[in-house]
Image (tube, rainbow, N blue to C red):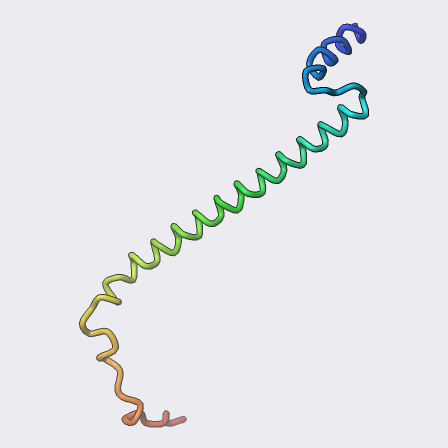
Length: 87
């Protein structure tokens, strides 16, 4: 049984110029590093897209305030400010 699985493994790896188990382990470690790197990149892209959608939602929610003609009108000029009276 073990010999059959070993033969199947060698049939699987032989086309990739793997001549020993050490070479096979090196190839597997390289593949795992590449897959891990791709996962990190995909995660960063996902996080960027999430942040962009949150920013877009915030801008859309605040668009009426920003496009209003009264933006900043309700505030007095600095010269008219009075100090607060403490009680």
